[in-house]
Image 1 (cartoon, rainbow, N blue to C red):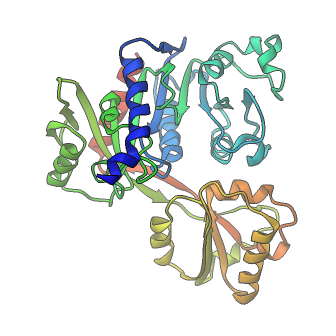
Image 2 (cartoon, rainbow, N blue to C red; image 1 turned 180 degrees about the horizontal axis):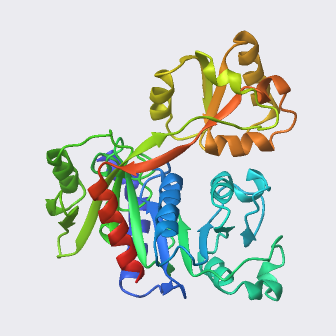
Length: 377
């Protein structure tokens, strides 16, 4: 009972907002070009960035979009810059945000931009000439970009003023929505019924294999009936058909964070110092522990900005373990590079672990690509 009382103000706020949008009392608009929204209803940790990268790879492989101008629009969480900004690959995580910078570096043919106002951001991406005259773009550092033909919206599911062409909603396998609660007592930032607004649901961070029975159980947890594993489709109450898929995280060979100073021999060490600022590092730890003995582990808050004190802590761990390699995530690597006075002893042994997401079967991958492209026309 006390839980319901504590959650009532937030629940009421979300319910009122949802009612206004559903009844058309608050307006939502579509962008001039197709848009793909990647989002969730929980606070962080569902894998939006690697799934955004997977979507970009899908578009770049497709006959329809491979030769088009593809753009990604993000809020740029915790960035210092203001307004619309094109993300520069040689820029900093502090200026643009760690995730947009990571995407920009990995996809040089894709325009990556940040703007808290997603409607404004889509307008500038579609009509970059307006950056030269619009007062709202006066802070924009680089106004040279092609007009976007399609835009991937990173973490925009709660930005309901902009109506996406297709909504992809992610759910963490280890944080099932039906067992969670709204903030502040849980990690849900939106009403569970909003899962019904998704066109494609993806259960992320799964074990590499799930049988059809467990997939059907998940479909039930998410409010789907008549789920068919072969078609990857189920039906919500009211008759809406949704696609439900399951993905897992795959890790790739470690890459140096500081290429010029790196000593690749450290990769072959048997000892490892691990640090990260992500919601959960359990899968990364499990992967690395297959090849290394993790002698030190530092778990910082999500999107942590590294300080000289943090660098001193890591350097102390290196002195205690002089043969160990130091590993972190791609996102953390973007922020560490921003930190001043990283000593050479740390630079030479500091490596990042790239990740990418994969579906549990070739059939699911084919269904995802066909379904996504069908929404885009």
